[in-house]
Image (cartoon, rainbow, N blue to C red; front, side):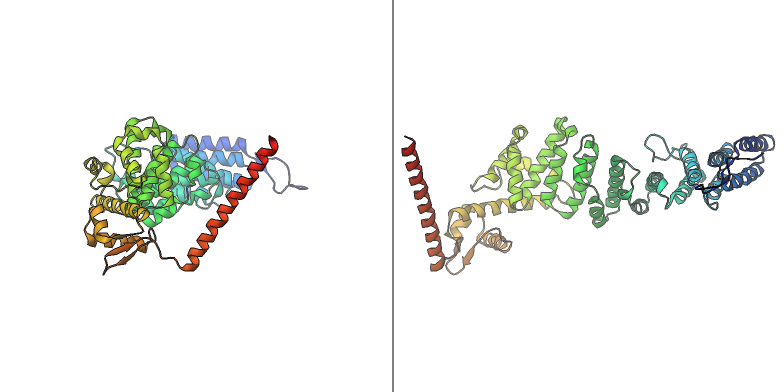
Length: 458
């Protein structure tokens, strides 16, 4: 017998019924039908009829019990087709309550996903048939469809999507796994924790890189705020992020970004605790820093690394940094060039043939900058002799450095003279002289003032 919780009146919007007692009776009747005659379809019909009554009567607690009971009957009977059909039916009923849909999803998720992390698919028996794998995937797909567009189930949708991507990757379909995962804009979800969002985006980056879509990988990587990675407890995510960035920047052949990636890995607490790991990260950071084009930022980073006491434990790197910071000509190959060439940083394909050549170029560029700071003009043959280069190669490198603005130079080919200082017009010379005189007079005035001040105090 149906009892009413009270008729709609005043500010009340709907009439609520109390069908709890009747619900318990219907669940027992359905269980009896399944146990005695194995008639699952009749049991489900009985429960679906009562589900409608509960839904119309706005009895949410009874409604949740009915939908959970219906799914449990399908599971107990091992009827996967009936389970999928019931999931779809219950979630698409007209004006279905959000709590009922939530109950449907929460009831079925443990049957396909592990509780360990919330997104790993339940493992199947090694001897399982392809049918069982397809059923597991079908249930996950059905649950994803149910959660689509529902803000109150966005966390569940993210986990189900990640589980489906795992299944696709296990089947060898990496491209489809990446496409499935990138459909979810997890950065906009409010119900997921910060760590879970970061892990989800990291998985998006990994799969995107795996399918060689480097442009999209860079776009997805920008979704992660690096300030979040610097927070306490995010060490593992930080290492994973910059390890993935290494793969992208290797593809881009961006030596300075690679140096920064390795240094970020090196500065992580968990890496600092392992001697082999921090030495490898610091060595790679120094290597790619030396391979980077000369800039203020590059020099600043090199000076900061030079002050790191741990650099003393890697003599080759310490000496390399010292050489590139001094305003002295470097002889190539370096005394420890063989050791540098065997570093793992140089051996990463497809870049292994390129980095040693770039290293030689950086040494030449350093030497030209040093020469430009000491000479206003010099014979090309003499400079080539000082730098141990062929005159033609020297001219090429000087021309490149002039083009990118890293050094000022003019080459007089007939006279074989390289001029590193620009000619000054009489007006410029007079302006410089006037500026120097002004500075001198200011110093004289300041000194006179200080002398008078001292005399007064005495």
